[in-house]
Image (cartoon, rainbow, N blue to C red):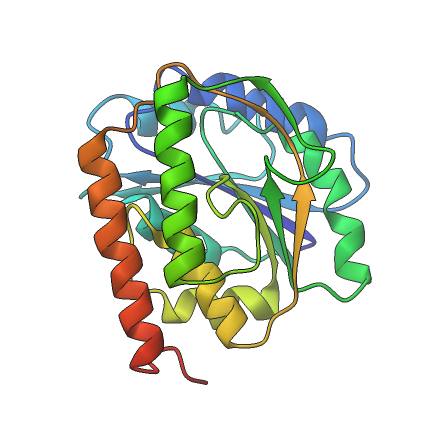
Length: 239
């Protein structure tokens, strides 16, 4: 298996069909084998039923149905570790970054990179629909906190479009301990700790106007970033 696509989903019945059909339309034209894993994180709506009904239209589509909600990071971890691809990419169910942009990621693996992360803040990035200034401000504050407490040497740790080799996946996600707000920060911190080579690549990103990040969420993120900092000090991510 060459490529695995992992899509974490929580109550995504309104958006998941469009995203999956878009993924299928692109991947079905490629000359490599692939699989698409949707990981439902305790969805209460018709997400699971809808994904199951698309199995005849979307090649190699699989659904992992977690009955309880554990957090996006938990769903990503389970999908990444259960996938079979030599390269494994997780993306958001809202399709804010479309699957065709993986085409620009794959060549970096042949250049020796272990992880390629999508970035909205590096040269060449295109933010097609910007988020409200309040959310942008909170995002800036969060980036400052991350750069101060957990230097990752990347400009954008939070974009939901990241690809890993099989080796990096199995090493990094096996050590993951944070499953909600700051899981992206932790997996990148683990990757740095383990010596994996990370490439930050520009993406085209469309803000989802239905997505909301409240101040309470930012506070929870802060506490989780502090936990990552503590884990690094305590050497919990050691080889």
